[in-house]
Amino acid sequence: YDNAMAENFFSILKTECIYRHKPKTLQEANELIDRYIYFYNHERIQTKTGVAPLSLRHSA
Image (cartoon, rainbow, N blue to C red; front, side, top):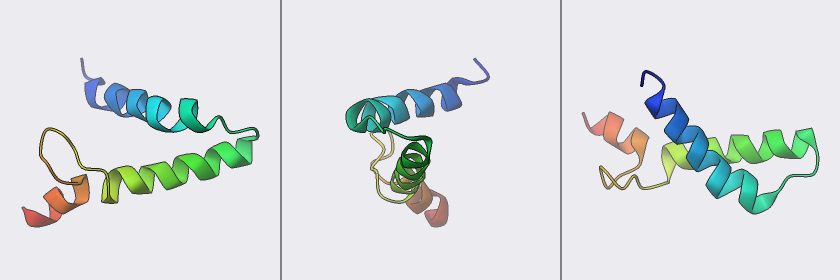
């Protein structure tokens, strides 16, 4: 249960990024994951809060 947030993130990463785009090389996978992490933190609206994570952090 200590890893719940990390496990949830990696589940979403695999579902929305890796399984959808299927990178062919390690470099392609690294670039894809980097872009997804930026998207997840800056743009992706979280269903629980209704805003992106960094927007929520900066508003506090």
